[in-house]
Image 1 (cartoon, rainbow, N blue to C red):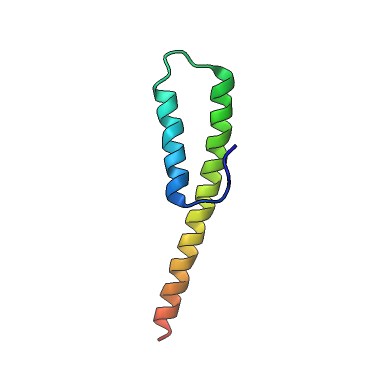
Image 2 (spheres, rainbow, N blue to C red; image 1 turned 180 degrees about the vertical axis):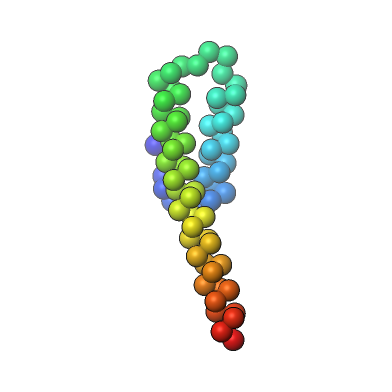
Length: 68
């Protein structure tokens, strides 16, 4: 399964690869599809957390600049 470290860009690229895999399937192998869905779910969760961290950083920067 996917690692939880890495950049947001890397996670989004992995999600794009999964989407592309689904789009290119003539006949869907359900076992492989299930594995890919599980990986995508983890990637989405990690990406949401990374976006939250980025938002918090911007909020801190904004507060810091307002206090000057």
